[in-house]
Length: 241
Image (cartoon, rainbow, N blue to C red; front, side, top):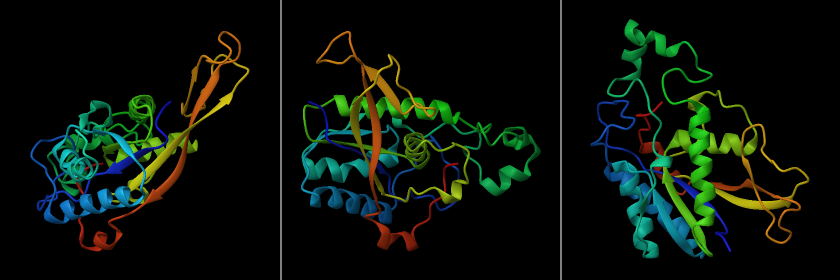
């Protein structure tokens, strides 16, 4: 048996009055509003009346604080998972408008398709999909919650949907404290390798007929909600690229 669903929860608003691109920098925790947002996400999960069997969290302060209400609601001890951390970013510690005006940063802007200013989309995809599949396999039943960040969650969405990675960051559908839910489906495949162009599928041996037909395990996105939607208008969402 495995988990029924994996929920990717984004952290709440971060206290960042100076508008710094914080990326992985330490010392950026939730604002008061961010704590309310995180509680809204936990309340939404509790109201679904679905058992949550495990909670995995990015090691950064804002995600650990966002995971706290979920841990309290379900009596779980959060497990740190480095694979769901914020991507690396050349602009950490700067303000975006100032960075793009500074010639020393211009070489990092030449290739938005990779992107050249930070961790490659393909690298984010590999680690996120590995973390999601491991989350499914980590429990005997129930659901698993992963508390992560906007870009990793959005790249997972793009991969599973079979969409191209280059995108306008302003148009990501991944609001603060939003919940993106995946299920994993299994279908017999005649080939020994079952991977999509985006890499969203993995292949395992068929346990019913070992050595015959492998099973392709494919992620399917089954839900997206914004439990903190009523708080979004008052929130500031800057700090990562």
